[in-house]
Amino acid sequence: MMRINKFLAEAGVCSRRGADALVLSGAVLINGLAAEIGAQVDEAKDRVEVNGVLVAPKKSQPCCLMLNKPVRVLSTARDPEGRQTVLDLVPEPLRMGRRLYPVGRLDYFSEGLILLTDDGALTQRLVHPRHHVAKTYRVLVRGRVTDAALKAMRGGMTLAEGERLAPVDVKVLSGREGKTQLEMTLRQGVNRQIRRMMRDLGLTVLRLIRVAEGPLALGSLPVGGVRPLSQGELSALRRELGLED
Image 1 (cartoon, rainbow, N blue to C red):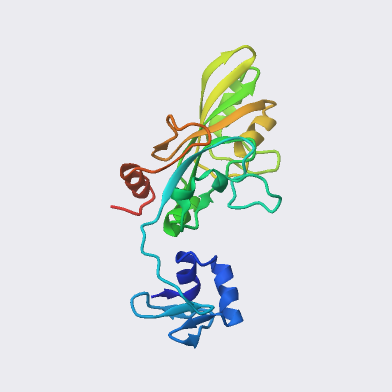
Image 2 (cartoon, helix red, strand yellow):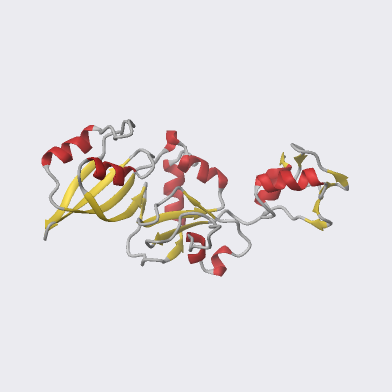
């Protein structure tokens, strides 16, 4: 059994909020009777219609895709201003009949690994602070990063806005021509954390790429490329999130 709004959302009709609106409008029938907010549906027995059209329960397995997000692409499902979003980069065969959405965010000028899925349970675990998985970034900054700056990041900084950060694993990968490349692993979900850390340390971010999330690695996936997770990758991610033994 499940609530009618969840049933309609998982069947790809609309969002849960949109489903509630349909129910309130009288457009949803369960076994020929007008549905009520919070009504329960038995997928195996009940007949659900929306505006006279039978709604079949979702039978396909959830989908999880890895995308290598380019810069100047929004990490949202849609944009009212018509700007390009991550979903615009997904080929039609991979999103046909699915309501995919991005898990988490990469800001407009950041790039790299972002997950797209229609798996609600996986999404909830990935975004919940208690299950927050480590994310690794390659960060190119202008100038030299001092030992004092590295120590501050490793010790746990307090941002100018007052937010206290968990310690960050950081190491210098290279330094030449007035630029330094860092590898940073975060286990905390603070908005625009790396850019704000660099700002407070007097460093300018030139490029920011997410290269790994938990057991998943971006690898050789080209910029703008998208692919389904392998069964091994998906199982490893689910185990890390406590969704599999």
